[in-house]
Image 1 (cartoon, rainbow, N blue to C red):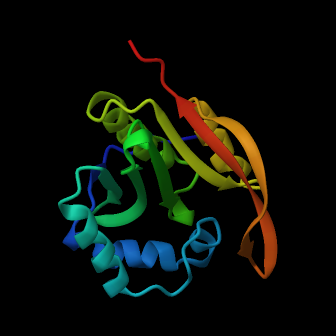
Image 2 (cartoon, helix red, strand yellow):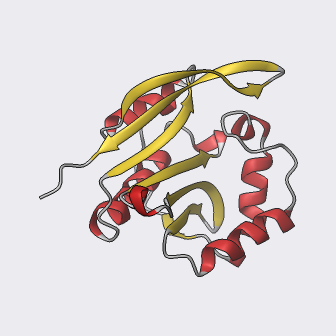
Length: 172
C-alpha cells in the first residue's frame, strides 16, 4: 500500500542531483530494469544533463527525500516533425522506495507537462515483460500494451522481451 510522504519533493534534474542520479542507476536492481549499463560515471550523467538543459523537448525530474535522489523520470518529445506529437518516457526508483507511490508521483508530474504544456497526443515506453509492478503503474495512468518485442535486450546474460506501451490522449 502506497504511503504519503509529505517530505517527497519533485524537481527538475540539475547539477546538484548528479551524484544521486549516478548512484540510483548504479544500483544493480535499478539498472537491471532499464536499458542503462551498470557502473556509469558521474561524467556521463553530467553530459546527459548538459544536453537537456537548453532542450525544451526534454523534461527530466527527480524525486527527493530529505535532499536525496530516490527516483527519476524523463520525458523526451521526438524531434522528427511527423512525430512531434509523441514522446518517450524512462524512469527508475530506488529499491527502498518502490511500491510507495514515488513512481506514481513522478509519472503524474511528467504527464502533466506532456498534456498541459507540450500538448502531446502520444506518450510511449518500453518495459520488461516480466516487470509486473511497472506494468501495473503504467496501466494505472492509461498506458496500453501495443505489442511484445522479443529478445529486445540482454539482462542477466539472457535475452528478454519488452512490452511496447503507449497512452493516447483524446484531444479537445
